Image (cartoon, rainbow, N blue to C red):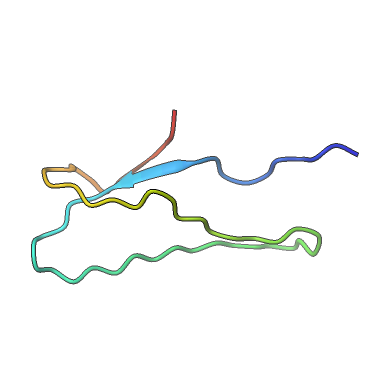
Length: 62
């Protein structure tokens, strides 16, 4: 039996945040009609940067 990769590949999201502003990060997943596979969200390398991000923008990595 061969392993099957499913789902979204790595993504990078950038967005502008106003200093002092409270933000809310929402990660949503949808597991529709699948009893054999578990669903999860993995957040890796979360960073804050100064400057104009011009976002929000989500793009595939690579």
